[in-house]
Image 1 (cartoon, helix red, strand yellow):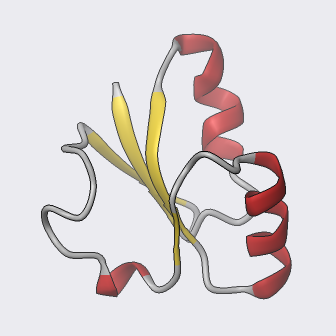
Image 2 (image 1 turned 120 degrees about the vertical axis):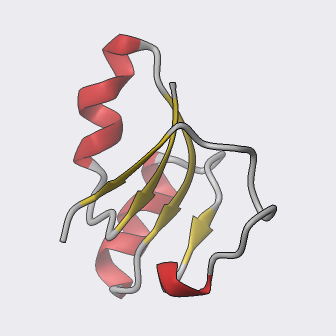
Length: 69
């Protein structure tokens, strides 16, 4: 399963889905502190800002969108 994470916070979705073998295609967060945590913990996952600016075709196709609003 490949997912995109919006309003990622410190990314609980990746922690929960990791044992299942799911892959995160991108994360999206606007707050500076969680962004710093995400960049440190997940350096290989693209980190986007405002999820409303993500356009089709910018990332691999995903199966699911998860969000922490």
